Length: 368
Image (tube, rainbow, N blue to C red; front, side, top):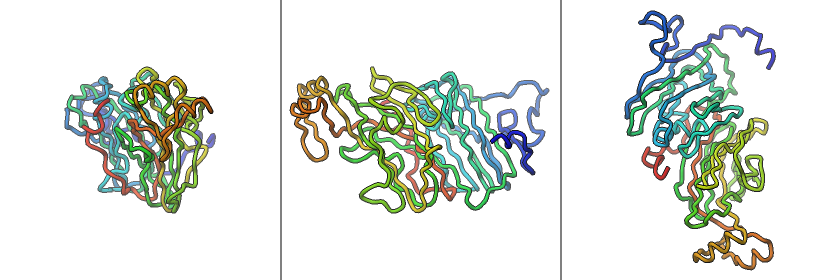
């Protein structure tokens, strides 16, 4: 890494795409005025789109993306859409709500920093994931909300002329949501995807169903990664939801390089958390599927609340004898349904994927 700081790479050029120089052309900044600060931002009306950065005919790498807007409410964080295209592809490799892509789950901002994303003071969107391309790239922001973005500031930093060998992969991101998960069906961070690549990690949002399960713990489910032909059983399996993000016995608010939980609202039972597989790479050479079980845990108090409300719990296919289990163990595991959403990040050997398209804005913002 130290060599990179003081070595001049041959034929590589640096570009910043901003409103001062939208095309990133050499000598193209601050034209059309007196060279002073007069074009740092603009508005983006509801339904309008803006190309943040575009390059054709050359190889390169997107190095950093920064965005800020003044209206950082749920309808903006979920209603503004970010799409990224590589090498002239017809469909985007990245298609996700603005907030979720940058680590803000459930339409709620949070201050955090990790190895790839950050929000220093809870009012910006920063990404430093390297995103290589061979012949071109295009990054588009679309305002699918019902309100104007009054002030849009951004900067896309990229290099041109990078040499990318045959093993270089393309960056992708996939967002999905199940406003109510299906009983005993694992939630999919990443539906089955064919090809060769690397699963980079995921940003997750959970709204626990307190009307059914009160404030019982929702995160006993185990993360599973099905690799290269796995069907009924995965190759990789964790031990619990909070264990997957490197903590234990529940999860509070924290942010580390590779795992964290920037949003931990125990009053509303809303949680936003992430795991980045940088020191522990997850490679696939045929296909991959990544899931999380929907399993909860109740103690004597929450078990009594659910019993009093006439709630019947199951674990697997068997009915839970709550009184006996609490007496024997002090707790009971059970299957549950909650509101889960996620943005999974991965590298793939091609610029397009065969995953479902981004859900309509109404489905993204419902209930948040």
